[in-house]
Image 1 (cartoon, one colour):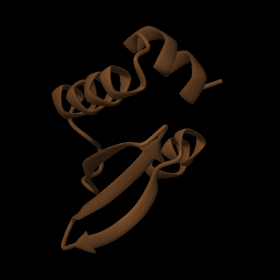
Image 2 (spheres, rainbow, N blue to C red):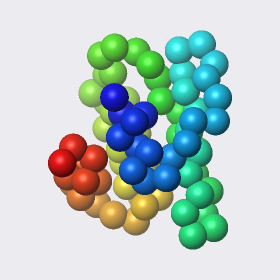
Image 3 (cartoon, rainbow, N blue to C red):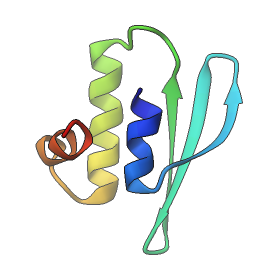
Image 4 (cartoon, rainbow, N blue to C red):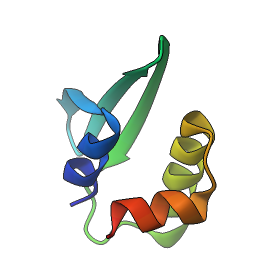
Length: 71
């Protein structure tokens, strides 16, 4: 599950509202929030946007993020 995988990058669940979970990461003084829908399956475009946003925050490529997440 994507939420569990994101804990590798310091994300913690802040709250859940209905079918969405709000996560927070605080790396090197930079705070990042991301909302993950709990829909199964997650739409490809939604997943792509989430991964792009996280990669930008972490200052790594999306490809590198995917490799680290799914190793």
